Length: 272
Length: 272
Image (cartoon, chains in turn blue, cyan):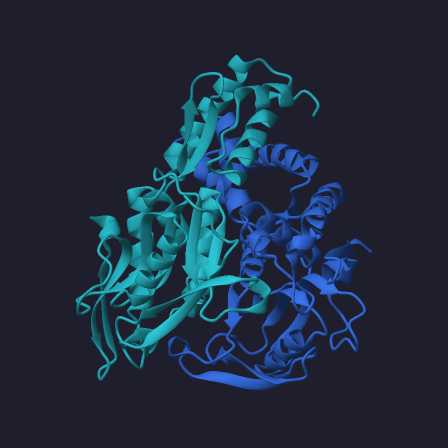
């Protein structure tokens, strides 16, 4: 790279950090890249950090020492989180979304790039300090949320399948009991998908009694991995005997009136 | 926002564009945001554009006139595309990936945030000028590629299901014939998922004879939407009677030797 002016360095540093969240970048990397003194780079980074913090999109963390460097930790400010969630509650509480069985039609929200990024950023914020190695989700609707979260944490995703597929190679299959319907169901994960001892975060879109998530917890144990957290987008409040105890939810479906097509949503425990 | 110095404006402009690809932003938006003259903003934008172009990550396009503004179009430079693909070919041609039936284990690559972003950027580059409204994919492995592409094009994704689910509400279901196995299969899309007249891009991870993609083409027609493009990550070369004619592929599986566990990959037609 040719020698850059400060103005050009700032643009380049910004794009490097935004495109590589949670990645440690040594000052020497930037110093060599721009043929500049480390002291100048430090000043650049201070300017970038100030802006990023003021905008509420995250923070640059400096780790000292020979193996040190700077990391961009994307987070969402409380104000942004509240503002976005308020809009989401309005969208979600539209009675037209109500489906038989107390489910909600959410595919439009889960297909929308801005909502997906927003939800991903909230989960990435909530679990930023948990040293997660891998996100695990089950097909199908949790997948976009898992990937959005993973893109802010810069870690891989593994997808649990409802039935075993030829394209997964050999799999580990478990049976679990659906919490709501009490039926026995099956889920599989490719044997080579998850390393022993890895730190895992479970992400899903919807939780009633928690049977599906409970199944994923059992799979994580089956692979001798460590469960570090569970994030669900919408939980159903007051579900009889919740199978899962410790989780982060963004929204809580507190009332569903199928007859009058009325839905009431509250804040999830993310906001507690 | 308080009045910013040029250095701070540059950081902020960079993050605004990178986080909002394909979104038209009027100069007046920035002028008001920074309490600065439009002429200063134009200079800022020229600096950002120069850097972004040199880095090969895209381009800022200026549209003149009262409804004009500036848009960030993410693209991938030819050099970057070639470099990344070379690494991917090496990864993919590992004989351990070979599964019965000539399929490849690709879930690790499709779960990796950097590869996903890279593949998404390639598709977003290839279809940047097609005025796509919506990306359509079928569960499960195409989903991350569809969302990655959508995040660079800043448009929504709809997911076709293999079987109809209560959480989708009423659906349109079609039968299609699998090109390889000649079996009749089913796919469904929620009635409210796709608007009539919308411009659609199909994204999938793997194409043998093309039966699944052909099914999605039929669904797009069923919704009176316009098919604007098809992108597949890996196509199998020399598949007997290809059902799909016009598509963009990134890689071509040219030889599979199941006995000796040997795989040969070539460039897809993206590079032609």
